[in-house]
Length: 143
Ligand code: DQA
Image (tube, rainbow, N blue to C red):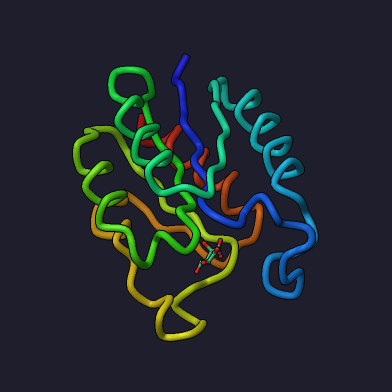
């Protein structure tokens, strides 16, 4: 069974309360539940995690080597700033799907650059929580 790491960056633990007009009213736990259901239907295992700390995300990526077969990552604001996360992803040689609930390219200019995008096999943005499910489907196809 393919083992997938789903990583969530800063402030995504506040979904539900956080700018619902942009991010919707589902909580991160709701999204986790949807991902678990989808993974079961696809015959995949998932490990769904969130951290507000860049270094923790980097360590999880380092530890993913040899353990996970694919990654879904919503690095949230670190998408636009983190060369450290970029470098950690570069060490992994497994498919990477970048997900965003909103479409950062349609928002403020400071969200237009992504340090993840050059390493991602696919970017799914602006689909809300459904984006995570589409990412799992894409990984199923790729693996
Ligand atoms: C986000 C978009 C980012 O620009 C923002 O910093 C987030 C969430 C999204 O899922 O739409 O925290 O990654």
